[in-house]
Image (cartoon, rainbow, N blue to C red; front, side, top):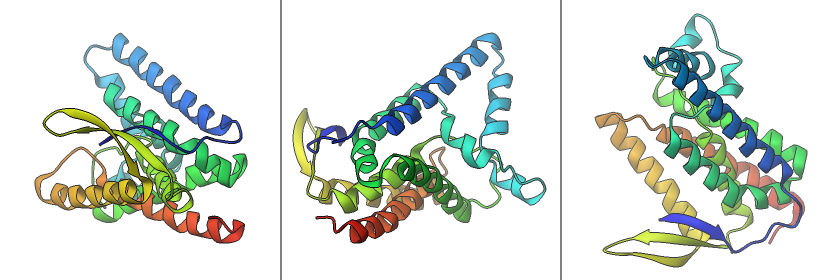
Length: 219
């Protein structure tokens, strides 16, 4: 199920969400420049190891800068396009609910929480964790709590593709279950996708979203 758009329009201009998307795109364009200048791929790999978060590095030189920078580095076209599309769909409404500054703080802390949730299951991984998906998963978790009544217009692939409106209270828990299931499977088979970061980010978003909903007497 690939989301096309949601049915809840944003009230305020989501300039923080737009800013985050622009920064991610600019960093990815820089990655393309690095890749184009070094056909061996070593420069781009070094970039990932410097600005991505490598769990095993924690035990001898904690990469504090990478706590933030890993959220703005992506591993390919599908990675950046998919992440930014999900952020565009769900981020504007969550920014509405949180306010601009608190949304930025929530996004960053959500990405960090997702990172450490990933580390719980991969404490000695020698591979850099990169991508905004942990932080975006937190946004999706908050969206689920605050806008559960929304509908997600999605492209569904069965025998033939078709478009359907799926309630957010069904779409988002289903997405979360898929992340957990894939995480369990990845623990056995191995994969390059940080499913536990997705799950951890979503849990963080639900917890923070519940607090915001209670404080603002949300629907």
